[in-house]
Each structure stands twice: as C-alpha cells, then as structure tokens.
Image (cartoon, rainbow, N blue to C red):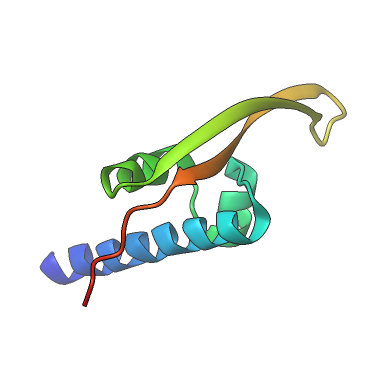
Length: 88
C-alpha cells in the first residue's frame, strides 16, 4: 500500500508542476486543457491542493460552443501569486 500511495503522490506532484508550467506558458488553463496536456481529470481538486501550497488563482466563466454546436460555459483559470521558493 505504501509504495502505491507514494507513486500516486509522485504523480500528483508532477501534475501540480505540469499545471503551473502550462499556465506560465499559456497564461490560462481550462479543465479540457488540464486533461489533454497535464493528465489531470480533476483540475479543481489539483488547484485546491495547490492553494494549500501557496498558489493564488483567479477565474472567469467563458461561453463557447461544444462538439454538438450547443452553447456551453466553462471556467478559465490563471495564477495570481505563486508560493515563494525556499532558499537553499
């Protein structure tokens, strides 16, 4: 159990880094982008964890068209503040 738990934790830490890097490179992220580019199917949960690490996010609702041509809403997130890095 411990080995599985440690591997899951390592994967989750990698997702935090992938999400932060994606936002740095692209300015924002959506749930679809998080799934496609970061492997995170639960962006809101990863962001909640990241808030606990010191990240501050902002968001807004946007309107777009889905694959069936219907109007849909989705949230776009960006980083306002990153945690301070610890000095070595």
